[in-house]
Image (cartoon, rainbow, N blue to C red; front, side):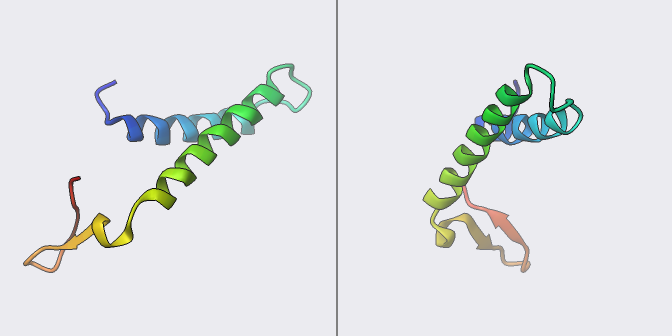
Length: 70
C-alpha cells in the first residue's frame, strides 16, 4: 500500500497474469481471472493513451532521462 496507486494497478496486473497462467482453464475462477486481467490491462492502456509523451520524459543536464512529476 506504500506504492503510488498506478504502481499498485501495474503490480496487480502482473499478479493477475501470473495467477491466470497457473490456474487450470477448467477452474471455476478462471473466467473471473480473465475478466479481471482484461479490465486491469484496459485501464492501464487508457492511462498510457492519456499521457502526453512530451510531458512524461525530461532530459536532465547529465543526459539522463527522468520522469517529470505532474
